[in-house]
Length: 260
Image (cartoon, rainbow, N blue to C red):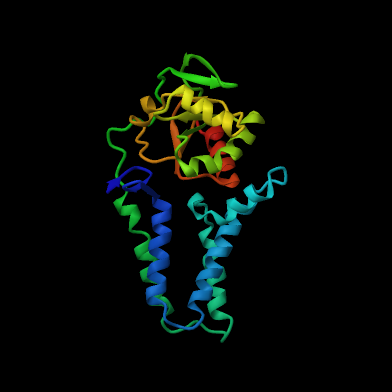
């Protein structure tokens, strides 16, 4: 087991701290909430929290399946817990116009257990808080380019061709990159031939940097995909482990643009 800055590694499985919080909360609630309508309240809480967070990032210009994945792929995180919890409490209150007697204990214990991952998350000791100016080679239109430092003031996404979650978010990143968004894809540990063949086979026109292992270690990247929001001065202002939804990508881009 590996405790990283972005999540916990269990062999080949990487679980973000947000996902671990969700898992612990759901399991605890199902174990303690033995009163009527508890499962329905949980479903309504998750549904409202997910929709409230994901809907602003949906785009009519994207294929329908990609928009649907933004909502149903829980690996993408993005939960609006306050609206979700309020909807869930309303679902418990409404049938009998009162809350069940066991609710306070179940709710307090669930929230406490769900908060535990915040205590396990290690401090970023020894890790760089700014993007290193290490020159990396790049593929543009499948053609290798001379090494150069990554630009700042945008998104840096670490990925690999063997990573399923990485592949699932590439169409979203490609679409935003083609519209001029400052999104820097950084492949880790694979040759230019491997990456080029993958992009060509999947008809992807993304521009990507290579040899990202030169940056992933100093930045504490332990799972893929990992996305960093980097300010104009190169400071890492936010991190996300796992595939992104449209709303999350837009939020990270705004953080990168607005941070000093």
